[in-house]
Every structure is written in structure tokens, then in C-alpha cells.
Amino acid sequence: MNIHAGRKPLYKVQEFYEEQDVELLFGEGITASDFNDDALGRALDVLHDADIETLYTALAMSTIQSLKMTAQFDGFLPIHSDTTSLSLYGEYPDQDDIEIVRGYSKDHRPDLKQMLFGLSTVRGVPLCGNVNNGNKDDHTWNLDTLAKLAGLVSEDVHGKPIYIADAAAVTKDNLAQFHETKTHFISRLPATFSLCEQLKRTAWEKEHAWYELGHMSESVHSATYKIQSFRRELYGQTYRFIAVRSTNLEARKEHKLEDVLVREKKSLEKAIQQETRCMYSCEADAQQAADAFVHTKRRSLH
Image (cartoon, rainbow, N blue to C red; front, side):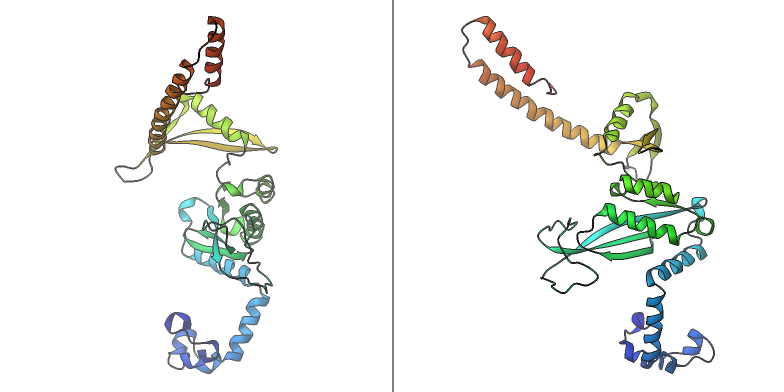
């Protein structure tokens, strides 16, 4: 209340409440003097000893439940998780808990040191968050967050958690953690997995198998979507994979393909002109050169 209404320093909070109806806010018998800096200091010590992150998550879950924010999800609790980096200037020689160091920069400033912030939310309400070393990778952060949420979110009390994150959540260790904690998840299969390319090729080859989802937005110019569903095994467990096809993405890909075709045609015509300037002693040598030329260009789209 103090921060939002005036932001007095800790030792002056008592003065702030001398101007408020304290009994109306906190109950009968409470006075402004109860908010002296010694009392508030002891309260902060208690919060620290109780583990502020765990306490905050409990409060957030209580709020989410009281507002019935997940009623539409049929017993599931959708948890969106992601990280971002904050670039900093300077040396920072004295570092205790958090290391301000170089790492993968989401600000596109690899020359600067940074900290990494991680956050998990339920329908926009922060569920848990933390500050991390600047060189902590998203794979490890997801692994740590999964372990923390498993101890804070109870399925029988809060509902079945669905962990929703980007492709950094899909690693061998993280998949094992999902399985161990029995956590449902939604993510994107990284292109570094050979299975990703296999599934896309399978989807393209089964043109009749696309399921039409239609528009996902009320906008007139919004994209339409088609999907195909597959069940495949990865690291000993069976997962459901969904290939998604978007009309907007297809249009962009088609436009890009047209540019590729134009550039490739010009390149091939130039190469052919250069080849036709060569002189050969006999037709066999010319044919051999022609065959070699065709072989080197066999992967072209023309």
C-alpha cells in the first residue's frame, strides 16, 4: 500500500500510516505504531526464512484459484514459461549470488555482460520468477523451473499442470523430468532433432490427411490452419507431435521461393554462357563436360 500510495522509506512507513484509517484497512485494535521499522524488519526476516519464492507462488496459486481463472481448462493449469536477458555496462567485480557475465544475449548485444530473468505465468499472473547468472542457458533454466514447480503445484489441489515453453524445453534431461514429474507439456520440437524433418516430410507426403482447423482469429485477413497428428517415440517415451500448416506462412514461403527461382535462373544462365565458350577437341569430350555440368547442378530447382 505504501509503495503504491506514496513510497515512504522503511523507517518512515509508520508516518505514512498515521495519515490512514489503519483499523479500516487491517482490523480493530491495529495502530500506525504497529508499523514501526523494527516490526517491519522482523517481518522481512520471517519472510526470508520462509523462502519468499515459495511463499509468493502459494499466494499466486491462491489468487488464481479464488478468481477461478482456470475454470475453462477442464482441470488443467496452463503454465507459460520463458526467459529474457538484461544487458549491463561496467565491470561488476564484487558478485555474490548472481554472476553478471557474458552469455547468449536476447538483446543482440553479445559484447555486454548480462543477467537472465525467468518467469512462469498462468493467464498472465506471475506464478514464480527468478534472477539468474548471465550465462545460464534456457535448457538448464527450464530443468530447474520444472523441478521447482513440481514441488509447488499439486495436481489434486491446483489441477494438472501443462508446461508451455519454446523449443529450449525439449532436451533429453528435460523430457526425463517431464516424465518423472508426470507433467504435461506443449513445446516445439527443435530442428536439431532428425525426427523433426522426418515428421514434416511425412506430413507433406500425406496430403489427404490434413485436418482443417480454419481461422484462429476473428480478423478477416487472419491465417487459416491445417494440422496432422503423429505418435512417435523419443528417448524411450511416446509423444504426440502435431505438424501445423499456415496459409500466411505458405504465402511467405511461396514469395521467397519465387525470389530463389529468379536468382537461380540467372545464375544457371550465366554458368551456361561460360560453358559454351569452352572449345573441345571432340564430341566425346564435350559430352563428358556437359554431363559433368548437369551433375554439379542436379540439386537445382530448374
